[in-house]
Amino acid sequence: MANHLVPFLIENRGVRGFAVEITEGIPELLGWREYSPDMLRLLGHALAATPLLAADIGEGARFNLQFQGADGQALKMLVAQVNQQMQLRGMAKCDVGTEGDFQKLMGGGTLACMLEPKSGGADRYQAMVEILGDNLSEALEIYFAQSEQLRTRICLGASPTKFAGLMVQRLPEGCSDDDWVHVYHLFQTLAEPELLAVDAETLLRRLFNEDTVRVFPARPIALQCQCSHAQISAMLLGLGEEELQPVLTELGRVDVTCEFCGKNYGYREVEVRELFAAAKVASDATASQTLQ
Image (tube, rainbow, N blue to C red):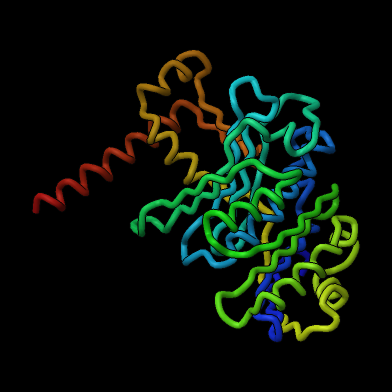
């Protein structure tokens, strides 16, 4: 299982955690955009962090880690999304050749954790994350401490061939101050090169060799886009026929490119007309049934 999320519990310390490893599908999903090494590393950190943050999401929900740049900022947007099935995707919009450290790339913008529930479920949840610290790990740790009141340590790593992450959290019960200090200091010894160099279970054995670590079955992660013809069709219907008319008049077709994977969805004019005609028939049928 090349891409996976590994839950674990440090039983004698009252600390839970998750490890993420992603090695397959990186060029296929991200290769259509040209990212500088600094941008690829930041996006890789975000893609590694997102399954860690979303490990407990409910059925049918989707979690987003989303950044919006300020006016004039080189990094315009960065999004990493994962659903309950652990289908993961991400992308960044930035000026060509954008480089810099975490604060240079993201400082001044807005970072948010967003939970989109299953359709018909509870209200959408959004929490803002202050862009503090020297890297994304530190910003997310500060978010957990301030917003969730949950002691958390995170380490993230990214290279052109592997994204990885490790997170530990102090449980409300069963973890004394001494236990957390012990785990905290061990975690402090972990750096990005080591995180990328070994597999998750080997890393856990090395890092917590004096403790009782219970590793649970890994959950597969699919690094792939979730776009589909049905989703794009729904988006076009949402825009409306009048909005699309100028494009049809000029080009005789509508082309939509997925921002995440670069796949193009093309609709000839006759297909657009058929799409709206079918939607009208379905709407009229629903209205008729409601009246009856």
